[in-house]
Image 1 (spheres, helix red, strand yellow):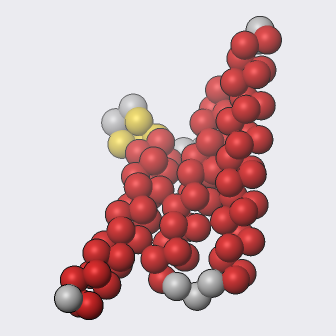
Image 2 (cartoon, one colour; image 1 turned 180 degrees about the vertical axis):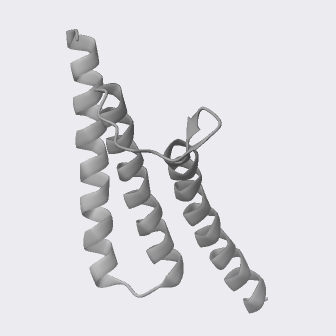
Length: 99
């Protein structure tokens, strides 16, 4: 592993950890559904980052697969996006109800 790969891994882990930390801090201060969905989406993004780095190191457990693709590799990116979509839908519904 060269210095570029190490820098890539450290930067993804540190920025993801920082985002997850602040998201958890926000979660403890708000009960708004849209913001809570954004927080969960941010945490899911960090979980995806950790999973992809573990895969990069070759650390994999017994995995369910669909064909040759592990279910976690399909689920994690879509889970994050699904939480963001749900948060945006909540906000759009709120905006249209007010008018």
